[in-house]
Length: 442
Figure 1 (cartoon, rainbow, N blue to C red):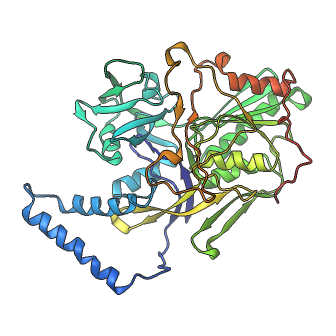
Figure 2 (figure 1 turned 30 degrees about the horizontal axis):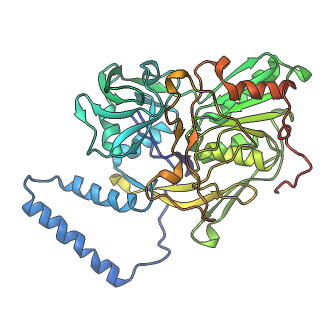
Figure 3 (figure 1 turned 120 degrees about the vertical axis):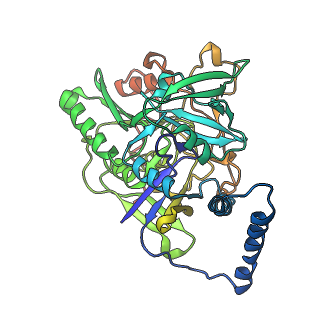
C-alpha cells in the first residue's frame, strides 16, 4: 500500500496531528548509498552522550524520550518537513487523512518558539471561539508553550470530547494576551463545500483528504443539475488557505478539469525515482470556464492543482502568490516504534517548474481590502522561503510573504466577486479566459 500526501508547514490539530507530507511506504527501505565504516564508528558518540546523560543528569531521564528527541533532532535538522512520529502520532496521522478526528480544529506551525495559527478550520470549536489566522498561542491551561516542540504542544491540545482548554493568545493589534476557553470536539472535516451563486458554481476545497475527489464530483454534478446547459456560466474553485493533503487527491481533483497531459511529476535524488502523473479523458465540468482562487495560505497539494490548471491553460488563477511548498515527504513506518517523515523528492508542474520557496504566481494578482482594525498591520503570511532550513529553490530566486486574509462575508470578498464578474462578462481581463493558442505542456 502506498499513500502520498503533501501538506503545508503546519500540523493539523486534533486527536491526530497531521504530520502527513509524503508517500507512505510500507515496504522494505532500500539503502541507496551505504555510509562508510568511519561514519558508523562516529555513532559511538551518540552512545557515549546517551550514557553520560543517564548517569549524571540532575534528574533521572526517560530513555525512550531521549532517543525520540535524538532521532527527531536528526530529521528536523534536514528541513522543516522531515520529522519523527512516535507510535501514537503515526496512528493519529493515519486517522486524520480520513478526514475525521478529535480536537480544536486549527492548523498550526511553530514560529520563534511558540505555536502560530495558520488558519482555523471552518465550523470547528476554534473557529467558533474566534481564533484567527496569525494568532500566537503562548500558553495552554496556564503553562507556557515556550520550550515545547510542536508535537508536544499539539498533544497538550488534544483531550476528551467536551473537555475545556484555555489558550493564551497574543494577537497583533491587542495590548495584552487574550485567554480563550474552548471545548474540544470531534472534528469532521467536510473538505468540499459548494453552492450556486446565481449562474455560477462556487466550490470551496479546504484540504485534500481521502474524500475530497468524491466530494468535488458530487458538488460539480449537483451544480450542473441545478444549472443545466447555458444557464451555468462557469466555476470558481476556492483553494485559499488550503494547506494541502493527499497527493492522489490533488491529482484526481486536477484530472476532474483536464482531458489529457501531465498533471505533476516528482523527482527524487536519483534519476530512476522520477514519477509522472497524467490526466485521463473526461472533464467533469463539460469544459465550462474555471477560475481558481489562491493566496498565501494555499500550499502543497493546492499548488499542484493550481499549477496544473494554469500550465494547461484550463483555468485562470486569481488572488495572491501561494505558499511555495514544492517538496514531497515519504512516511516510512518503523514497526511498533512509529514512523519517520523524510523529504525524498521535489514536485514539478507540467511545464517543468518547481515552485519550491517561490509559490504559484496568479495570472491575475488581486489583494483584498483590509478592515480598519487590520490596516497598518503586517497582513502577509510568511511562506516556505521564510522557514528555517527550507530547501532552496533550484534557480536561486525565492519569494515569501503573501496576503492570506479572506473576508468572513462573501460580499466583502474582493477576489471572489471579481471572479464572479469575470465569469459573467461584467469585467474584462487579458488573463481570462486563458490564451488557448499558447503552448500547452503534454
